[in-house]
Structures are given as structure tokens and as C-alpha cells.
Image: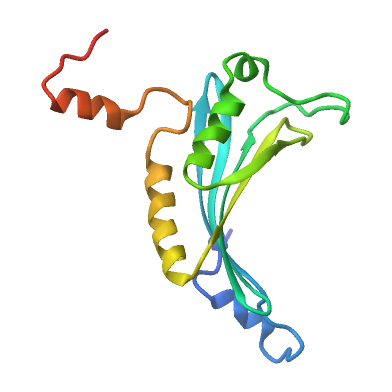
Length: 167
């Protein structure tokens, strides 16, 4: 029996070939993202770091950080608040929002059937700002996630000054 190789997602702009010959169709915005799964106090989250180019009268450049819980159970209705009790108790939602604001991202925690998800955005001035923001997002993506534990960077800095790490 012959097996078919798995289908791959188109790379680059290859997906635009689907629009060949369709003059009334055009690309109206572009988004590029990187995802990461993080663990915060025993909960798992998908974090999406994304940059957006949105043409309108003038081209808009934006960046976003969105995070949603990877919950297995779903909430029955909007009457269930969807906040994770341990994260509320530790003030994680507010701390995370504050850390994102420190990097210029503003947003909120909204209801979803899987629990509260965070949607935080930043408006960028121009293409150069977008290019710099991509580097910041990549750095944030590689660092320990906000409130997910001690920062390795801080530990390295402490060790670099000759201090002994405690138990």
C-alpha cells in the first residue's frame, strides 16, 4: 500500500498562488507569528508573539502578545468567570499585564470557553519600529515567561557577580 507524504504548510508567499487570476482579491494585511507553550503555576498556556502590517489610508504596524490556556475542560457558559483560582490567588493576571505594559503592550483578559485569555497590543511607528519589535518579541519568547518562575537572566547576573546561589 502506497503512503502519501504529509502535506506541508506553504512557506513564504507561496499561498498567494491560490489568488492567481482573481483580480478582485488582494492581500489586505499580513501577520507573522511565533508560538510557545509555557507552564505557569501548574497551568499550561499557548503564547503567540505576532507582528501585523495593516494597509489602510496609511500602513499601520502593530505587534501583539496573546495567551490562552490549554485547558482540557470547557466552561459551560459565560456565567462561569474562567479565572484560574491559583493564578488569581498569586495575582498572576495583574502581574503579567503589568509586565506587558512595561514593554508597551496594552490589553485585557477576556472570557473564552477554555478560561480567560490575554490579548495585548502595541502600535508601532514605522517599519523600522516593527523590525526592532520583532527582535524584542524574540527575546521575550526565549526568556522565562512572566510569572512562570525565576528569571534565568537574573540568576546568571547574580552568579556573574560572584554571589552564591541559595537553595
